[in-house]
Length: 445
Image 1 (cartoon, rainbow, N blue to C red):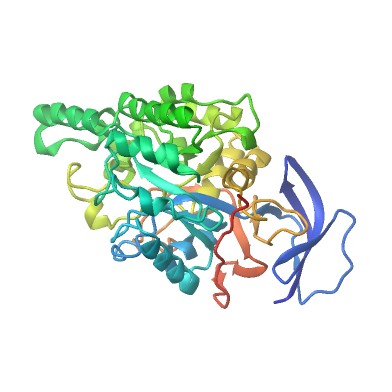
Image 2: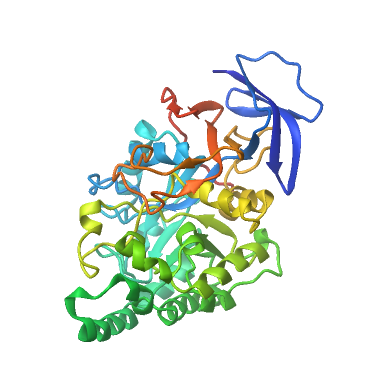
């Protein structure tokens, strides 16, 4: 489809909400007009009563390909994301093999070009020994490098002080970190096992992977970043304690240290372990209601810059094991925008702020080329939502390969009706058009 006209939409963009028409040609937004657009188009969408948002950009997902495709794969998880209004994603390197060389990283890009309905980028993984490979990275072609300062798979835990210093000193692109102190966590877990044995309940996950363990690691990362003027992005802040490390007194594009909050840390608290158990076992852990509320406040006041999912599917069989055996992580990308819109319905956040944190700021923070905004000349990555319809999450409408969600049984009071990726109507009223795949994200660095 070369031209598309969206009529009578209520645009939510750059801090404002207003009626306008949007004309799309060859994948780009060509014209936005509050007075209406009279041009002919190959397809016209009457969006009266609907809200038009920029497509969501999720900066942290685990799609499990290669090596773990029994849990999820790029095709299935990207498709689920598109159904939830996500038009671009950034995927993590802890697949098998770990994406810690340029050759392995490019294999993931090649695979995504063949099967991803959404736009994509992939993080390069760090180890104690791959600095030489990291220095070969072209920062205009990847979102950044990912460092696990807490427990990880394979050899991706970076715990050698000399390696850490060298990476923070020499790597020029954005470094994104998972921050938890492994020795402290192991010590905490040992104490709980001594008390409860192998049947340790999941409700103690937040005390084992404690706020102190998170703060010790994240404060160390911040210290290194300040020392070397490194561009640091801290993934999935989970504790109120860590918020003291962040600033909101300078514009986002001037920050050298930024942070992300994830949907599960905004929605759930440790009280939910009683009913959800391992289904909400994530690393870093979901903690107290105080932590949850303070993270939400930090999203609103600008200390936390973006909202993502850390989408990380596992099978139900894996999750139904005992707490100590069940893996951490869960699927979220199909329902992230719905969850944030539910907070809007509850009066906790504005539509404009949702768009800022899930679209605008991700594009600014990663310096993504012409995405994240509804602007003339930008790629047409757009989402239409109906704020007056509702639906209940059930196994029948879950699109993840693992076929479960921690939101199962939840009724959302908004529906994503249409998702447009690069001008292509990829999803509309429950149906997909897979004739065009997404594109590799580019970065203006």
